[in-house]
Length: 228
Image (cartoon, rainbow, N blue to C red; front, top):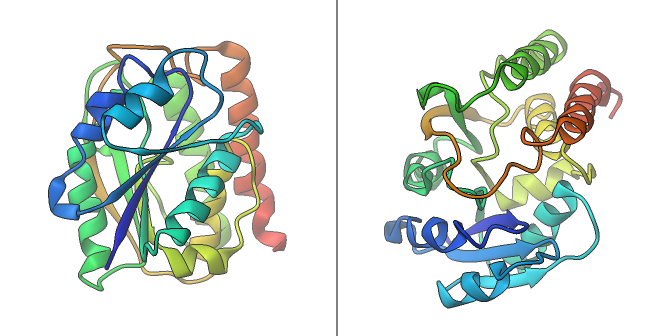
């Protein structure tokens, strides 16, 4: 199956090239960077590193991901994977994340930072608390116990379309997990590596107001999306 890797990015000039080049060549993946209007050289660097770049100036992490899905679909991808543009995650982990889908053993695979080798301090206390609360809510409502809400993940594109994701902000990954559980997708979690950023600043955990907004969106989706 053809794979596309979607990388939402905003002001990631310091790390985006390394992320793109670390994507395993065995995947034969098309790489789509969705730039949210960076004020640095993210677009030029990403293109020079071999990615296709789509500029999405409308705000929202979820909107950027959906724009990337549209482009992956247009490229004929059957599996779409998601990876951050920062250097906190290791793109080499995309291979075990995408692998179960290519083997026909799963529809949705989530890279779990809590199951993997997270560097001390990489996941802040607020992130761990939010993870616990949101995954607990999903387990109580839908009977699927996730261990993480990490952004590195992969799904069959036809299943992703069937879910009808509509969140446009940071609740988008949680919405995917909730709807995957609700619709009975074959779900698997695999360990992934995670470390503290060496370059750039987090758009969520690095900004108190951003962290509060993202946390509220995540908990709102985890607790209220069961109506769909």
